[in-house]
Amino acid sequence: MKPRIVKEITNTDTDSVTEVSTSAVRQVISKQTAEQVKSMMESVVTDGSGRHAAVSGYSIGGKTGTSEPLDANVNEGYVASYVAISPIEDTRNCFTPYII
Image (tube, rainbow, N blue to C red):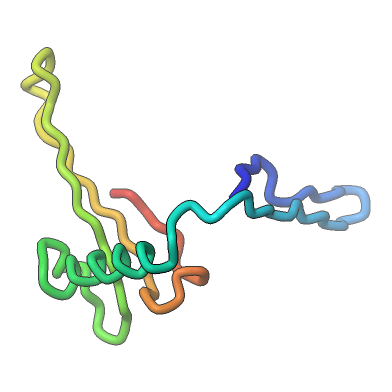
């Protein structure tokens, strides 16, 4: 998708709302690759290190990450991250991904 800064414009005098449309630029990865990545993300939740993110009745995919401190800041510690998507079957209507 082409990046955009404004989602909508509200005229405070008339309360009319004008939405700024999105536009597709190109397909970045193939459908087959996307399906493989979704499958791997789902297995992180069903069988892997993200299993605590599983919620009964929901299909969830996740990706864990860890970064190490820079040599100059070894006392800063590690940073762990996790990103999730749901539902796996229909990612066009998925929840907004959050990075924790």
